[in-house]
Length: 263
Length: 268
Image (cartoon, rainbow over all chains, first blue to last red; front, side):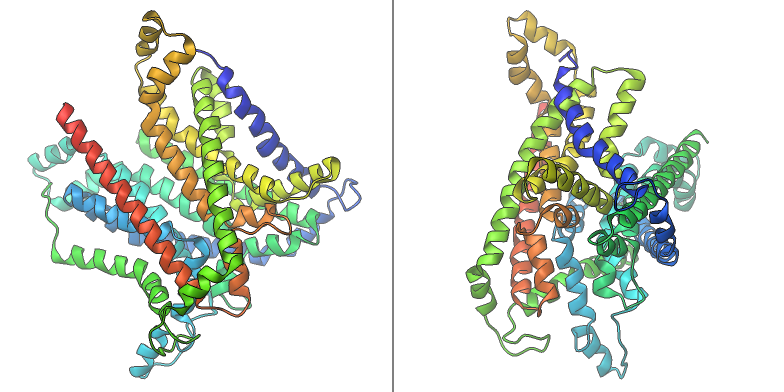
């Protein structure tokens, strides 16, 4: 128990299977097909700037919707009986453990022409196409990642000391004031990890847009996937840019969190 | 605060649950449909029968389970040992190792997938092997270990260090002290690490996609290729069965947690 030795296998493992692959991405990004130094891959990568920006935009909107939906839910959960809380959390997690592809495929079934939704709405005289647009992609993202937003916020909120809340009430605060002055500030760390857990995968995933989006809804993950089979250099350059962008995002989120904690 | 919830909040929760479950319910509903589209043509079990007769799917299911079992066990052993070792580092060195360990969690799946693919293709050229079962297994272990470390670490911090010394004083050697005393203290963390590893491995598509080579198929890959071909209601039948399996596992875990809580309340 006092020895550092048990960590040696894992440190070697990390070097071989985490560090070296990332270094290889960096190396491949700065070389051409023959292994000579080249910036051509980055020049090629700039061709996809629009898709990159659109991916971040879709991820941002999806994250915002998740936050707006999840925050009240997490708050309501903490106010329920403990057994009800556990059951509802379980119900939230069950869809999350279904296969990732099946969850998107389920929305394809729901949104396609002649689907149950389409038929119900056409009874009311509404005809439209619900699949193949950016809205459907965002819907898919929100569906995929909503539990990732609820769980961290709920965990942080349920750890808030009840004494603090009772003290605020004893001092004459209304429920709303208690929420605004006690619960909301203390739940910030949960919001931060929730935003991270939704934003990172939704900015970088592939397939969601291919299944639910139209021809213009290609995301940067789809680009990396397509391009990597033919041009590893450009694929590595885009991956490197994406990774750096996400690390910067995480650092900013962390700074934001620390400041809030101090204030 | 009053533990009371109004009718509005109940409606809100109900709407979100409908949002989460409606797509799954529709999939399950159409798994009993005697037609290939979303138009109801009568009740049937034939898609379930076809599903079990489909060797590709059964083989993929088997591969998925084997990989999840092996990856989670191996990751748990590696991660628990690592957590114990890391906890004995101090200051900056420890921060460095812990941050490095978190890289697979925070970096996008797709970047991890392509970077491992680069590594395996390069190593494959040098050592003359092709990507397949073992490269997928290694990749799954890669993204599972950090979760084990994250789950076991807090347990080590909370543990009373003197019980280890007590075990040594009472005549245990280091190894006995570990498996007779320490491991029991760490068990809840080890178990949740194992469980998280197992479920992440079952659900993974992106990393498997890049490290599987030409032949290896797991369930995600199989579903991916099925949805690219003509869509078959066998997928719906598969979803229904997976949903049932997940539900049963979740109920068992939930009951076990409640049982543990009761036991703890009795003790105190």
